[in-house]
Length: 461
Image (cartoon, rainbow, N blue to C red; front, side, top):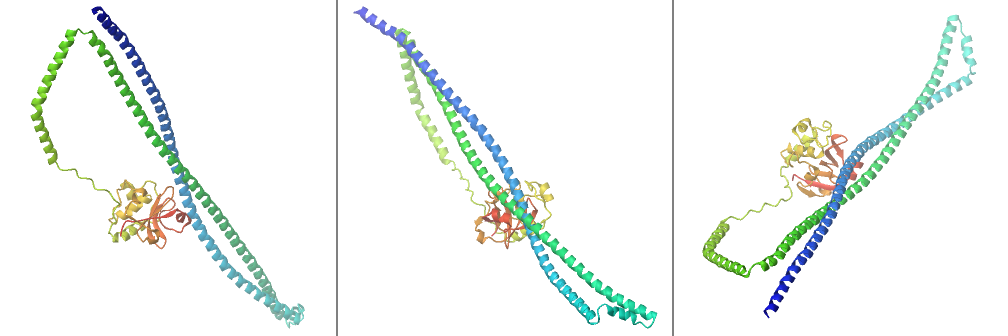
């Protein structure tokens, strides 16, 4: 019976000795396979992540290039609209000149008709008196040589007078014809130029619309790529965390797999001794915990009292829209200051954000508006941070039908709300643009009319 038991124990121990290494090896293979799968998956994710980053970089470069192109086309469209205005004025001026010429033509035709009537009467008188022989009779009727000379001079004067009238009439007709031809040519050229400019304006507007659509499309693609990059980063981090957990599990499994074999080899007496030491250590730990209970409770109580006595955090005040200034007199001050440099301040992209630019009166649209109001004691924001995006958030929104002098008006140029000016009333506004610098422009101008989408902000009540 004892032998049987011994054999049985040996078989179990032997079986355990063979079984544990096999189980550990199988687990190690599983862990290694799992790590390889995670590494492969993370490599794939990181490869896709790199591709997306490259795609995003290209989209950003494309967006920047489109923004510059939009700005370039926008500036050209603005200059073209100014040229159209000039040609329209020239066209009206030429029409007035033609109208004046027609009056002159009528007066000249009247004079020609009077001269024709005079010559007809002269011819009729000659015919009634015997035609040209009358002049001979006049000469032959001279009583002396001196009388003959006097009569010859008189006849010559009459003939020359008639000849001069005829020449003058021919000159008037030629001059009239020349003036008419010149004005018609001028009007034709003006209208041709105006037609070309209007065609160019239409083409530029189409280009702006096309580039704007492409810009928005790239912006959307950029947003999608950014979201995908964020998702891929999360996946990569998740895979890395999973691998770390797998490695930790593998180490724990290896440790647990070795523990039974080590314990099986220990003598029973040593096992009992270890168990005894563990029990003693457990009792000692319980005693220590019991002895420290009161002190710990006291400390916790003190800590709790300290926390309760501390004052709560103050929440930061929520930032609403920029308040509307009540400095009503500041409107006229801002307009007066801005108007003082009309025609004297060339446009500078990004200008007006340093003291040197301000002293030299070099602004772009937003920095000009900020400077004009700042000079009247109205702060619309920091010098360096001025932009149309910042100004469109100032004050409060009002409808275009209710806008009044001093309101900020915004235009969709190379981007949404890309240009800003100060409304003056009567359909005009004060602004700094790339075509004419600081100037007063009409909102009915073909360019500004198309770009104005009704965005108006009142920064002073």
